[in-house]
Each structure stands twice: as C-alpha cells, then as structure tokens.
Image 1: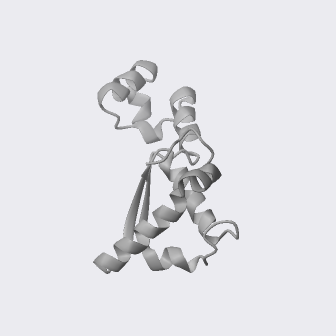
Image 2: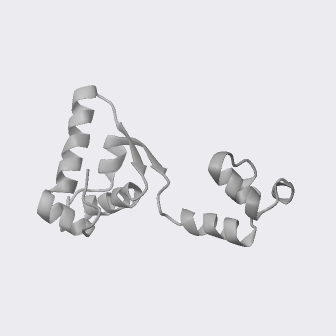
Length: 122
C-alpha cells in the first residue's frame, strides 16, 4: 500500500516504497522461479509507471531497462488514469457512444437515460 496523498518521490525518501517493491518482485522471482504478473488499479497504474522510470533513474534504482524484462512477465493496468477518463467522458457527454453499446447495471441505466440505446448500437 502507498500513501496517495504525497508525491511519488516522497514515497521513496520517506517509506523506501520503490526499493521495497523492487525487493518484493526480486524475492518472488527467486522463490517461485518465474516472472511476476503485476496488476495495478486506478492510481496504482501511475505509481507503476513512475516505478519503471525510477528503476533506471540515477537517483533511483540505477538499473537498466532489462530489469523489467527479467522480472516482470505481464503488467495489467485496470482503470488507470492514463488517458482513459477523457475518452469515457467524451463518450458520455458528447455522444461518441460506440464503446458504450453494452453497458449494464446502474451505469447502463444512467447512460440509457442520457442517450437512447438504439443510436448507441448502430
């Protein structure tokens, strides 16, 4: 877990967050003998992207980019704010709705109230 209220560089100086994350990934690979799969949700996606930059930074991990290829098999970003929100907002507010053709539940009801389901399914 990380403190989302502080800048990423402070996570390392205050908590050694990125050093510990690197150690956990290396330990997992050593114990299990295979690369890790990283799953990041929401702001965790930008934390992961910062971690990747930190690894090769002279002020950070001081490693080559090969470290990622040697230790990480897959990275899955779920709901990360990496230009996904503007597209969703544009789709909902401006009617670019081809990506919203099969919404269900509360969100589906909300979108159906704003945009007729028939034009969205064209």
